[in-house]
Length: 376
Image (tube, rainbow, N blue to C red; front, top):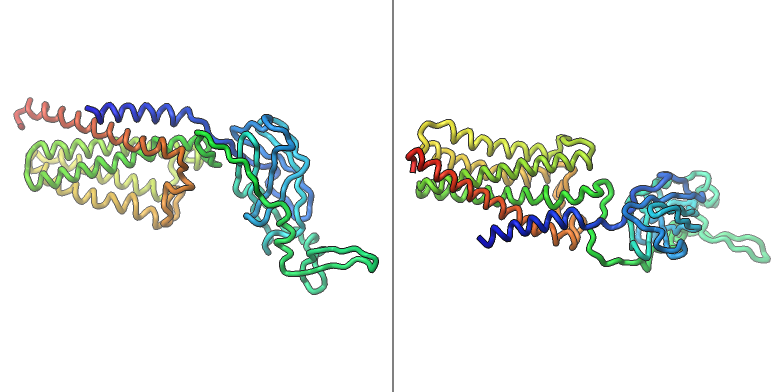
């Protein structure tokens, strides 16, 4: 009984924390989204869940960053509202690396909100005219201009790219420690679905493991109760698979623009659920319950054997919109922070416990139904 109460309490905690805990402040977008090197440009940075008016403009810093060594700090910063900042940037005439264009990250350091980052916020295009003005006849870039009594002299060198971008490094940032979920561009508030969509698949896996264990036990010792439990755990696992598929389609609708995009993970998940659906069709296709139970138990073993490659191996071999595609591990530090883990792991335990409880009720019901028709 204790694990049932614990499961209900965990699900209640997940619903409250998953829906009520706020997201960290972030940067939604920057306008304009393109600029040319060698120009002075004024940008508006639009925040999400931000409170820019809680600090003076002189205490807020903004950067356009290429990497840890190359960044340009904004000047003449103005606070237009809680969610909008305006700043001017003097863009170097040469890109931080030899290319026609580069993507720069936008960074806002706020005393109250902390640090916000938007990767690839603006595209900086190399201006050919500005590049020509900074090159001498040998093609080397001018890194220093010196004026004295002898006139104007120029110094050139191969380190000019770094020198032009290394004047304002990103440093001394404000780190705010609080209980908030991370802001992720594109998915925004739908990041909360992590606590409902993903644990459904963990619960499915545990239930299918229990189902195949009882199928093996039934083949070794054909007790009717082993067959009932194998079927009940498979039914409940299929239920959680359906819930996982539905919550995933809702998430995809808001994050990817379409509920079904033929993503490899979506396709393999649908195939896996259809394989388990055939398990119940097979059970119902025999007039002799014992014969049907034996064949269903054998089928269940092969169905579970196909589940692992379909859900965890094949999707990593192809490009996918899901985390963990092309061999990359999912639920790493970029997917879950410590705050999310405080809700995510209890969600797995809570939904799994509810799943086993539902399966137990299904077994008890089947026992009563079998006794009423004299099968037990």
